[in-house]
Amino acid sequence: MELVLSGADQRKVDRLTMDEFGLPPFTLMENAGRAAAAHINRQYGPMVSCKVGIVCGKGNNGGDGLVVARVLCGQGAPVHVLLLGSPATPEAALNLELLRKLREADKTIRLTITDWDPATTSLPDADLYVDAILGTGLTRTLRGLAAGAVEQLNSSGKPIAALDVPTGLHADTGAPLGAAVRADMTVTMGALKPGLLINEGPQYSPEYRRAEIGIPRHLIFADSVHRRYWLTTDRGVAQLLPQRHSRAHKYSAGMVLVVGGSPGLTGAPVMASTAAARVGAGYVACATPASIQPIMAEKLTEIAAIGLPEHPQGGLNISAAISDLQPWLTRAGCLLIGPGLGCHPRTRTFVRQLVASVDLPVVIDADGLRALDPDRIAAHSCKRWILTPHWGEFGALVPQPVDPVNALNLAHEWSRKWDSTLILKGMPSTIASPDYDGLICGSGSSALATAGTGDILAGLCAGLVAQGCSPMDAAVCAIHLGGAAADAYSKQYPEVSMMAMDMHQVLPLVLGRILPLRDLD
Image 1 (tube, rainbow, N blue to C red):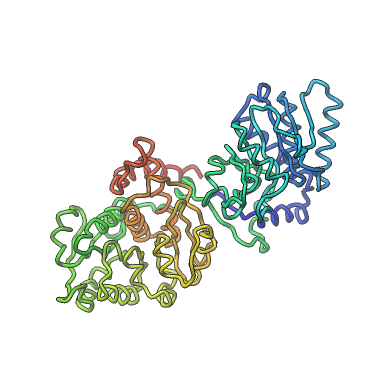
Image 2 (tube, rainbow, N blue to C red):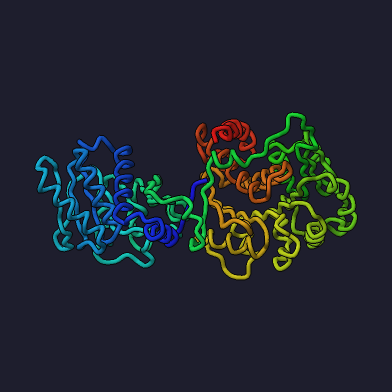
């Protein structure tokens, strides 16, 4: 998986690299600028024919921009540097001095250095602009010279490459702080930043590249680093996916028991059950109210359809239904409860009693989540549960108002309070568990904005747990595979045309592409 650090944690790691490891700050800046220039060259080169305007702030982000200017000049690019003030750090000041020395010593380079005057200065004519104004430290609304420069950059109509994060974008939340640069590409230093991946971040920089700047990996795991997040990748997921033994049979390959469905809501358990089977579970059984069992049996060819006794006054017959499920629960490797189950008070009581009585892993989705007593989740979960709420369901479970801008922090906080793996579904989805700070799903698109994709996610989770994955590994693989299936569909058809069941058809193609990657490490 790819490392993701907050702006503050990245600065801590930078400081550790300088103070404990002994790498000079000037070297870090040189590494950052050279790596950024290399990415810019690959994206927009050859630079000899590319006029570049670089807007530099006073801090280290501006210093990185000055290194970029020096490197691109050496590659033959005509470069115009605009300074928003005198450098405020020794490293940035030294890089400005080196740039001026280069201009004096080598008359063949095409380099202009201008101080930004808000009354008279406008952007120079350029084929490409580099935003090196502010980095990860911005936490309040952008004002002054920087805001004016951002406005001109966004009005230029030319490509913009940002350094670390687009100026004006919060590095941790992806929220614009007033005006923010709309970059075509961002080169971020060291680790990825959450703000590039979540909320509005992808709108301000749809592409990003990571620059390796020389930070030793062991320092990332220092005690002073607050939290470490990760971005899911095909290659990372390949290492987590279960491998089926050559002598496996249907029960050793993993059994899933799905409990869901109600009159008028037969599609949800069908999608969840099919997903569990498609991801590799050897045996899947689907238990539904007896009145819809014939419908389920007709829809589910490869999956056992079980009828549960109902109460004459509505909902499930609690004690009888739990009793009938016992033989299935003894063989199951995972219970999935909730898809389409309905919200009758008696059924809700059934959910609470069932999940409290079993000692196997449980995936709880949809109406199963609505039935839970939030104060009792931790008492029964024991790290075995996977909760899969969307934001409405999550908001009903927690006592305070929730804001998707804080998805990473909320997933981290409530996974620990509930002692459960928690998937907060969104774009992108975030995952956390009591033992991991959190992950961001690195796949998926707006094609997932259709009914039923959550049921498929729950089925994927259950199918993977039944095959031996830990709840956290299952959640990570499931969310990534579901997003990858949507991506695969979107390569052939318009995103808006995807329906949830289409994911079942492309999932084998996704698995066929990802599974071989485990052999590369």
